[in-house]
Image (cartoon, rainbow, N blue to C red; front, top):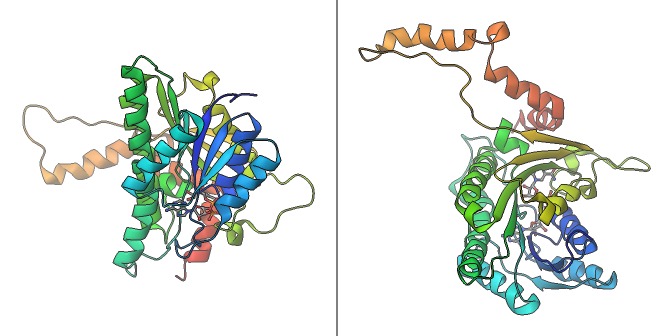
Length: 316
Ligand SMILES: NC(=O)c1ccc[n+]([C@@H]2O[C@H](COP(=O)([O-])OP(=O)(O)OC[C@H]3O[C@@H](n4cnc5c(N)ncnc54)[C@H](O)[C@@H]3O)[C@@H](O)[C@H]2O)c1
């Protein structure tokens, strides 16, 4: 049992990956606040999926409680952290997972489609993280330092790009950057912050991934959750500010923006016209002279899903 005595919050835990994470955390001994208002894939409506997951955890002998507020509400997120403390005596793990889609090409995207996706993903990560971190800082200052674990949810789209998803990519890329800064700020309190870029067969992706095969399904959400459980454990204290890609049985460590070539002008300022040669030279520093652009394409091709979505969205 990796998580005996720990308490976790999982946002968007009523379905798909979040449900799988909640069950996996509970199976390793964690008590779980199952957050989910049960909206549709576009973020509308409501249903009692959170309570169904709570019932599943309890039926297996675990402890869980439902929370049906939006994780993107600032006051609601504060109340959710307080609910964990009041119900289970503290908080150790926050899994930011909730998400929706409003796909559209950039020239057709409405303000509402942009705002809804940014709100659920980015503010839905900020609000619970902010209140959990305030709690962990207060515990530390009171001499009850208990560390803390944050596992957030980025996406291939946010890291490699995908046509038709500018809103989702902005949010998911932002979550990777957000994770790095939270990791830096919370290190002195023993709190780690990492992110996963998952791919799994859920209602959000089933049109791309297709039906499950007979036997072991490598694309099952249950094949992503093990890294969430491990990152939530004491054993993972040394891992922070990282992003891991989990898909179909493979676990990749990802690295983000980095300097891949440099040209420097000294003694005077750059002239606009000389930037042409400077930029060409930057690409020329790579074997084949192609640089980062091919890296991104190769990454998408290697994972397959981005290309599938690209084909699907080409007529959107
Ligand atoms: N499925 C994939 O292949 C894939 C790929 C990359 C990233 N992701 C990300 O993984 C996460 C989970 O996706 P999924 O595939 O399980 O989707 P899903 O639609 O099956 O589950 C998402 C859950 O989030 C809940 N939710 C939505 N808005 C919420 C809010 N404001 N507050 C709380 N809960 C809310 C929904 O009710 C739903 O139960 C998302 O962040 C998604 O963007 C999924």
